[in-house]
Image (cartoon, rainbow, N blue to C red; front, top):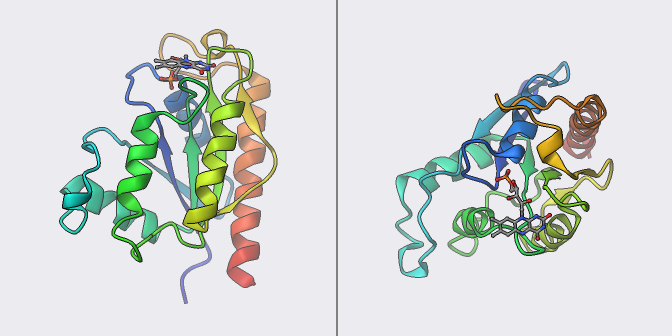
Length: 187
Ligand SMILES: Cc1cc2nc3c(=O)[nH]c(=O)nc-3n(C[C@H](O)[C@H](O)[C@H](O)COP(=O)(O)O)c2cc1C
């Protein structure tokens, strides 16, 4: 039997060095609940998806899929681009989901958070992403919803999330994800 620790794989849908969404993940690393672990995966280096290559994916995609498969739960930090999911994130998910029948996301609990400079804090992107979870047969945590508006005022120049309320929310999200993953494990 697998040990009792809940392993979480986190990734952000931004390649930007000063990414606010990467900052959310960095904050999450400081708030991992007891009995859980969090590893962050950088999507940088995943090329545009080409279905001609889905049976011979690049090494970076193979690595991504192995890590997804090994994790008990997934944590995604998504930016919002043009009211939706950034291409970088959707592209990585599309790669991982192929070829058909080899979907490592199948049955995985997943939690979402997101930061934007706008006033809705990635709400629209998050709901679009939840639609993708339906086909992937992921099991999303409904609440808390972590939507961080005006992120430019909440992350300092070193990439540290300085807003206490947001940090608290991320802590709650992680705790809830771990409880959710344990429930599903014992179901
Ligand atoms: C192509 C593009 C589209 C964007 N569209 C939105 C949007 O629809 N809503 C929003 O709140 N911010 C939007 N933004 C601003 C992002 O919130 C901002 O760039 C944010 O810093 C991206 O996340 P990151 O810091 O993790 O890279 C957009 C930015 C880009 C580059």
